[in-house]
Every structure is written in structure tokens, then in C-alpha cells.
Length: 79
Image 1 (cartoon, rainbow, N blue to C red):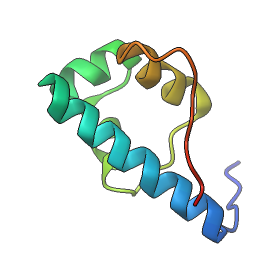
Image 2: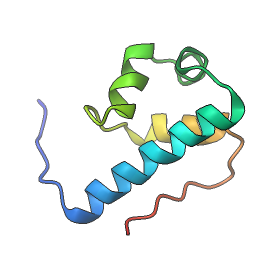
Image 3: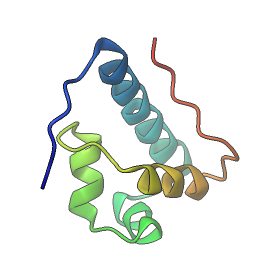
Image 4: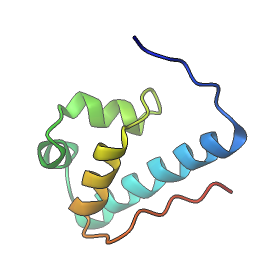
């Protein structure tokens, strides 16, 4: 059963900031969405949906993305 959560300004900003960060890292490293998806054990369409703002990633996917880019902590600004 899926629950729908009401988004707040903070959650929308956090989502936008996360998407912007992932896109920048993909470009900076020359990584494809396919490689990132393989690392996260998801399909490419899942990564695309996240980057288009159509889907919010679960924490395990966020952690895998940060791990892929060799980040040691997850920081997502909400402002």
C-alpha cells in the first residue's frame, strides 16, 4: 500500500538540490545513467525518473548514489 505524503517547501527544495547535485556529478565524472543505475541495482528508467522529479528515491538508493561518487556523508540542503 503506497502512502502519499504532502510535500513541504523544504522537501521540494531538498529534492531539487539532490537532483541538481546528481546531474552535476554525472556531468563532472562523465558517468552515464546506465552505470549509475547498475551500481544502485536499479533500472536506468528509475534513475531517469528520479532525475526528472517524477520519483523520490528511497534512502538506500540515495546512499548508493553518494557511495558511487565516493562521498562519505549524505548532505542535501533544504534551503
